[in-house]
Length: 140
Image (tube, rainbow, N blue to C red; front, top):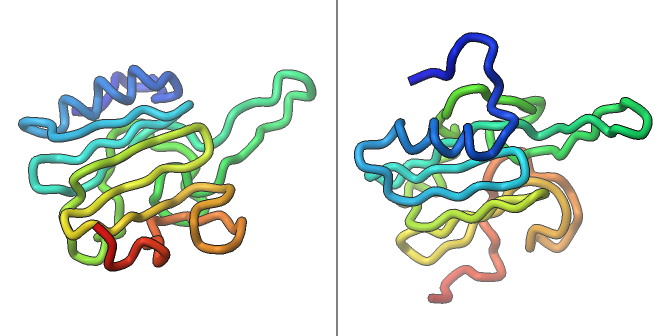
């Protein structure tokens, strides 16, 4: 179900409530600063919210690339939308969200990260979609 016309998903609890209505029954959910993620009963990830916020001091907008996990340029989703990445074909069993990044855990023990900052890939490059953290490969 979509949110009422013109209503944004900028407030995390609005996103969270919308995400919980999407899955029957919801499996797991996580709320970040301005975005939320949900794992449905089949292990598929969805997200909604905003990956940008207005800087009150100068009126500029600060962008946090990749928070939503939907690819380059996607900075806002008003309704819960499935992520295009399939996490290597594995079911997601856990999800976490912070102000700058998100993490998912799959049934085979793989960790995936997306967003901006230190994401476990040996650099500080933004990841617009979930990327497997190879440092954890093969560990349980």
